[in-house]
Image (cartoon, rainbow, N blue to C red):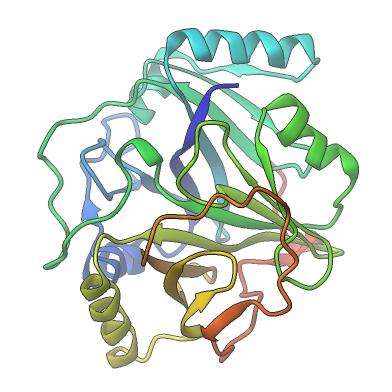
Length: 306
């Protein structure tokens, strides 16, 4: 499947008002216009797309859907046919849903971990329209997508990897330096970063561990780091550089209980030609000062069915 990466993310949360202040004033994201069909939600921008992240009212903090961007209509049609041939249950988005997402067409489906995904093409955009929520040099998104997401699943079997690798055509990046069963995947057309989505095995638990957002300059990363410290927001890991990625980043917890990794690329990703097995997570920094799993990763009995 000719998939670029994550085009948008949708969350449910009872903390929309906290995000309305936190997203622009801490992260520097822009506030987007709320579609007429979804007046109670919050839409956020990181580039010239109509939106990249949406928060919808809900009883608990959780991921509602992950939107994958197909290169165009032909790639979308080919992917839909492949899903159907594989027996994947698809829900075709109606005109109202497509207008809310700002896309031409979409289909909805679930992965073996139970998370809802959407495949779309042609998201609305307006050139030179992005305005950050505070003085900020902008985000690395555009044709690359919003960033990455790491999810926890109570069941990590071979069918999960087969779904993303064999069916969706993602590249297997490896298990990384994390403990336990983990897997990192990047979309077929992503040649800029190591992963778009990753899963970790957490028996009896489910939820978002963190999302990653890329900023254009080291200054933007440093200023965000200072804002997080001045506000005394809870940290997960301090500033550091991962072993497998030539990027510098830090992790702090959002109002929804999952961590946000703010990232700046020190140099282009090096395209590993083989699977690495790093002995440590980072070459410097990234001191763990908070829990690895925030409250957004919850016991299955607390995770609402939908």
